[in-house]
Image (tube, rainbow, N blue to C red; front, side):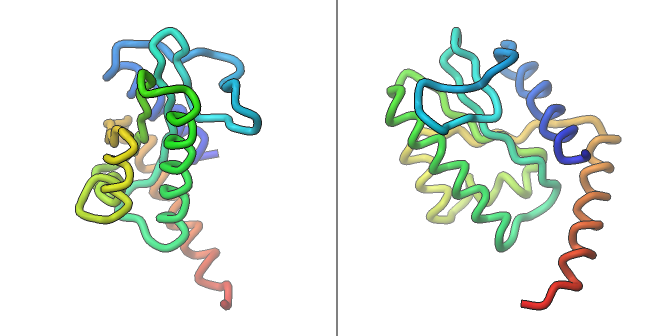
Length: 143
């Protein structure tokens, strides 16, 4: 859906920024149960993407924390020569992992690069539409 299209668009944009192409097919690492969003074995790059437009809150923050933990774990297992990138669709979302929060400090401590890339406007609009729809669905849920 919109989220998958947004993530694919993020990876294409990141490939252009880095001047590389990610491996196609399996993105399995030699670590049981760990599957990053993208990998380049020849360039030793591992990537998680987050297709969110705007600031993050609540469970969205937990997703980012989980991605940072996954990248830190991968880095611990594969070694420091691997680049670990957490890629965002907006600077507002990226600011949670690159600003003055303990989460951002943890990302820096683990050598995780926080990158925000530009994606096409039509895909941004599609992601925003999906976010609004999700907000409407969640508004009806009682906790």
